[in-house]
Image (cartoon, rainbow, N blue to C red; front, side, top):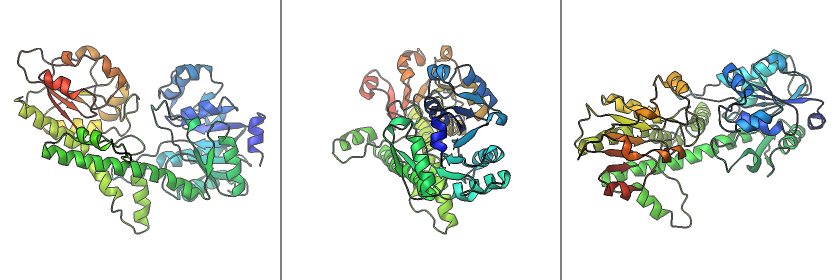
Length: 436
């Protein structure tokens, strides 16, 4: 195999299929070492990248403006490629079963353009078996080329954490696998170009696929435990975060906290794992229970918000409620599978139509995805209840007092989902503050 050698000598190119929160930073880093084609079917996104605007916020506008990468939404540009990286999203359907549509679509793109001698590496999170049982047959059928003879397949799970400026592609150990030892070794050499801390080879593609879903399932279960504690402690009148702070003084505490679990990884990946397990006759006893707990947290927070308003003497039928934050996590614009909107829908069930503000997200995307029109900064006033759902750094610039109705002796309720504020400070100011 000469894929690595040809990339280094610029005799061939590397293509990244899918330029989202994962694909974009990967493509940017590889473009510093080899010739890269960045492909995405989203024409709007490609146009923004060409203008030097990183809509994901992961690589940054400066990196886009100086990169040598070719951004394209045209398959005709996928020429002279001998190494493909597929980094498309893997969502779930409404019934929580895997939606492999993006992976299938990407496989079809590769199949229409692949040449002999190429290596294709999937990074999209899938259940064990998808790469070899779903993707390979599609590529073979469309291309007429045989895997293991004309081209080779591998899997290297993405481990990028959106908005995390500490744990980056180059300092996270990369799991790599191939359909045979030779392809695995070649894939490892290519990734070692951009991953400074090196790679960890596993024996099979299925093993690599399993690593990813287990990583996120483990986190999901631990957060579910903390969420269950939060619901019980709420009934006991105990402040969960005070318990957590005390627990974390012990050397072997794991450091998990309660919260909303959404996004494209932790809130989705466990369903991929349990889907395949059930096909093999095993029904999850722990993972699905954790998923149920975490999926119900939006409703729990909405119900708790109504209870706190009633306790404060606020007429909930006339209450004006603000939700601060719409993204699935802090300091990023990603609204995919954001559980903040479960809070929104839960309040709607009580007859309350809350207002949503998030200066990190794109308003048009919120409107398109959830049918909700966010408010602007100049509308942040005259509320009875403020729910801080996401702990964006930018919210530190918001004067909490200015958000509420300026009425003497009026009841003011703060629902602090992320323990963002100093509880004692606001209680001493006369606020009713509840935190998860």
